[in-house]
Each structure stands twice: as structure tokens, then as C-alpha cells.
Image (cartoon, rainbow, N blue to C red; front, top):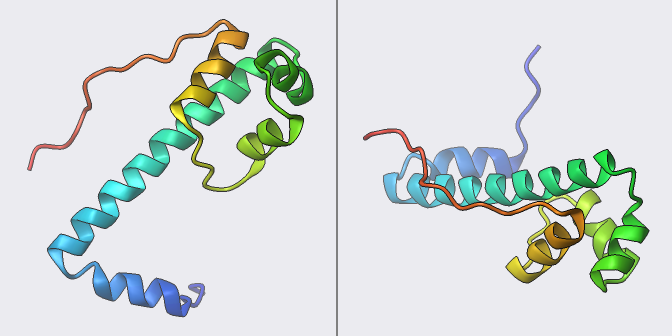
Length: 104
């Protein structure tokens, strides 16, 4: 049996019929996915090094709460400076590459 949709899900589905809304919604979702991928990659690097979140925070000059929220909160939106500081401590690089988008 299909799960009932919430009022918010129904509203968004209705709004996505409008091409302009759908494009803006898809762009926002893509940006959120990209941030989530960066955060997951940093957390994976932390785990591979056997480093705790508190240790990473200390080495990056941040409070443990900031790093814990970054790796556990849904939809975190860190600054580029935060991501670079964590990457430096983890000895990884953040790399920019051309986007692979569907033609259309």
C-alpha cells in the first residue's frame, strides 16, 4: 500500500506542474545534494583516519558542536571556509569540476 502524501508533498507536487517552479525546485535540490555529498565525503575521510568529531573540531579551531551538527544535522549549509578548514585538517582537497547535466 502506498504511503499517504503529506499536505506539503501534495502542495509541492501541484506547484511542480509550473515549469519555472519545477526548475527552481530542481536547482535547489541539486545544490542541497552537492553540499550533502561534500559533507559526507569529509565525514568519510574523518572516519578513515580514525579521528573523532571533537578531535577534528579542535584541530580545525572549531567547537565540537559545530562539527557534530555539520555531520549529523539534516540539510546543513556550511560555509566554504568551514569546508576548507576541515579538508585541510583531513589532508584532502575540495575539487571543482565541470557539471555533468542532462541535455535538454
